[in-house]
Image (cartoon, rainbow over all chains, first blue to last red; front, side, top):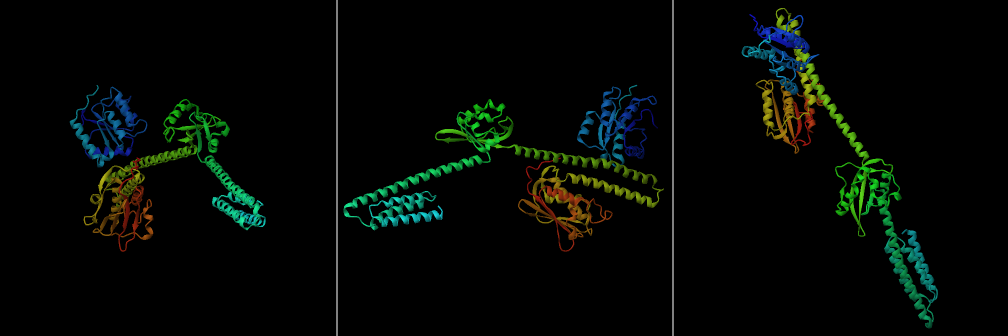
Length: 146
Length: 472
């Protein structure tokens, strides 16, 4: 049963296979939370702010953010939402292949909730799924702006 | 003195003696001995001059007795004549010797002048007023002046304008406390040519005391070429550094960017199997399994490529390493059957060295032995020998061995002696090992052993080159 208080996941990932891998992992773990997919930072911002066709994404939700993406990469996306009063409270987990020091520093400067390197997210992202499942059961999400 | 000179002197002396003996005693023939004496004294060997002089004096005396005697009444005249001749010869000897000494001094000074003129460095000497008193040819060529244009001029003529102001003061300072030293050490010095152009120089200054007057001799070396060579060298070094960095970046990017599509291929093939396990025919399942295996092979190839590109350039931490323990640790981590024995034979040293590279070398060699084992209860032995500045480690196994004709080939990149489907391997392990060992000035070789097995020997320095830097 999915109510209004079900946490939605905005998956910002340009790689089709990686995105599908994560979606598969949720399915496999029998987690039915809706996964909304955006292919880059621009698309993700659109989805968060809403458009003529769709309303803005309502809380509670969290963002799983890749760093290397075309058009607008993950770090620029973070900059954008932290500057936007309506979006600055967004919970973001970085999920990337990059284990570079400078990426981690930059991400945490933009107040990410966690930085996860894909190769350490477990086989079929099992560790990541476990973490998220626990996270939204325990953690209070920011109230909806409406 | 040449042989003909010598002969001439002898003949002349003899002729004078014969003439003297035949002439009546009053005739002053012995004065002619002056000729051979002068001839002999002009030569380089002072002994010949001396011998001739003494000989002629003696002959003058002997001549007195062999010449026809005069009447007793004029004997005193003959004796006086003889005495005057002896005196004249004596004077000649003294004068000749003086002349000769003077000549030699002149020659010596001429020689010194030539040496100074032709010295590879420019030499300029100044007096306490800073006026140039000597400038050798090399310095004239360097500064493009004629000698007459420099002598008596202040030394500041050769100093670039921007350094001229303070120069007399520091010059006076040097005269006050003269100590040989190099000028303006650490600063870039320049000389000024007649046409105003400048060139980089190195200058040494020495106090010289001549006849109670103090001078300063400056030795000037034009270092234009040296600076150019250094600049070229620096450019090469920078180029090399850049290309190394680019290579590193390339290897990093290649291995990361190639990895993600590879990861996708692995995942997709896995999902096909997961989703359709019941529908797929066995051949397709087998093909998909092979696809995954090949993807895995490509993955380890990329890992090794990255390792190879870094080998020898990244030292990591310098630690105290107990090599015996290191081998045991490696043995524990590798994928060997229970019955396979990795053993240390004899004493293994403890040394302070780059831990990761040495560990990589041991790991690759031991792993090779395990991978190529003939039976699961085989063994690999590690031992060490002290070679002074180096340790020589030996890793020997009881595997199939390597035929002698392949002993060089195996260290090349991507060389394997077995099909990859039989023994998984990138063919880079030994290439990595060799690159690491050689970057630490060591050597590695395969030693032929009778019977089965192969024996690798490599040397490793006891202490690291203190100039070794981590270049990553």
